Structures are given as C-alpha cells and as structure tokens.
Amino acid sequence: MASNIKYPENDAMYFIEGDALALITKVDSSGNGRTTARKQFKAISEAVTDGILIHYYAEPNSVTAITDSLDIDNALELSVVDYVKKCLYMDKAGKTADPNVMQASMAMATKHERNFKEAIQRYGVRKKDKTGGSRAVKVPNLV
Amino acid sequence: MAVHSISVKELISRVRLVFPDAPEAYIINLINDALVEIGMFKTKVVHAKISTTANKMYYNLADGAQDSSNNKLEANHILRVYLMDNEGDYIQIPRLLDKNLLLADATSEDNVNAPD
Image (cartoon, rainbow over all chains, first blue to last red; front, top):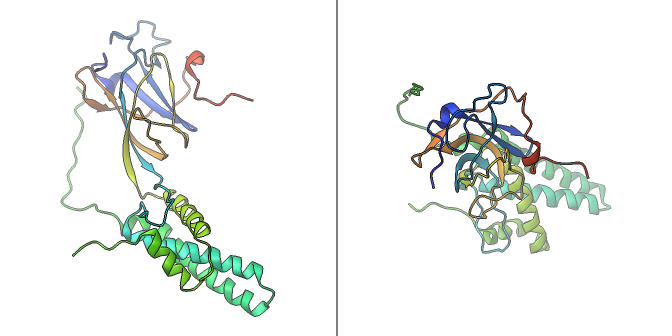
C-alpha cells in the first residue's frame, strides 16, 4: 500500500533522538497540507506497511558455532585473530606468578592490540573500500 | 581465484597454536567481542524497511529494534532515510537539524525512554 504523501522530499523530515528515529510530516492522512501554520509539523498521519526505508551501518552478526563464518570483509578477519590473542595473552599475564612470563605476555598482548587497532581503526575502511570509477555530481530536482 | 576467508573453526585452530588449552566457548565469546568492536566502524551497510504507524513520531532504533519483517536492525549509524510516496516509490527525505519542534507528540512517543 502506497502512502498519500506525494512529495516526501518536501513534506517529510526525520531526525535522530538517541535510539529513536523521529519522522515528521506537514500533511494529513489524505496528503493535504496542514492548515495550522504553527503546528504544521507533526507525526506521520497514516499507517503505511514498509513505509520507511533506511540505509545504515550495522553491527556484524555474532557467531555461535565453530562452523559459522565471520560476518565481516575477509580483509578484516585476521584482526579478529589479533583481538582474541590479545585477550588470551592478557589473561595469561594476569594468572601467572612468574614476572618474566607476565612481562612477555603483556608485550605480546600489546603487540596484538596494536595490530587490531591499526587494522580496524586506521585502515579498516580503506581496506574494504570499493569506491571507484569516474565521478559525477547529480543535483536533485526540487521543483 | 576463490576468495579466501576463515571460519570460526579455522580461527580457533590458529589461536590454539599458541594457546592449546583455550576453551572453545571462551574463544567464541572473544570473537563476538571483537565483532562488536569492529561493528563500531563502518564495516557493514544494510537497508531495512519499517512500517509507519498513524500519529507515531518515534521509531525504535535500539539494539533490540526490529524491521517490518521482524529482523533485528542492529543499527549503529543512519546514513539515509526514504519515505514511500503515493506511487509506492521511496523518496529520500531530509534530516532536520533544528529539533526544537513546537509540537511535542506526547501520545505517540512510546519509543522515548520514560523514567522508571
């Protein structure tokens, strides 16, 4: 079922408030503009199945079994190995009574943490960026 | 050439070269911790559809929020929002910068946290 809003780009807006997406329109359920100028923008007046389409950055799926695959680009998979090893080396450093083992474990934990951060924070987006080709600018027609 | 990727099983075997006694369940927990941290960066772009409700202003985007097919959104950062028009096409709508609306739609704000 389509909505009654003819020009959503002119009659509707959204904003984000914490964990909520707020949707406001200045038309009534028939698609006519609201007559009260002061209270022009209100919540959408109609129920529309699949009325909103959002594009967003999402979290990767979690894994539950050893047969699962990681829900990330394969360029980032080795960083997960670094993260796991970092945690295990830190655990080892915390459990041992031998200061030499503790020192060596902390050094390895730091190394793997640095690898993880470099892979994800510094190069993560660049490693999997698929942007390419010639560029063009398309100016929207708002008439 | 086929794309190489590693499964959880292969990842565990790599870790167990150094930590042979590491429990499988613990490693899987650590993998999920890593995925949560990786998810904070721009790694996965998805789109989802949400049904509108008459006179409802706020739509939930929290971790447990679901789209109209009851799939979890797991949204971290909204890129674009489209609204269906009278011909069934999705048209991109602008984001309002000044949120100081005169009219607060109190009766439909069920997705805004209330004190408990």
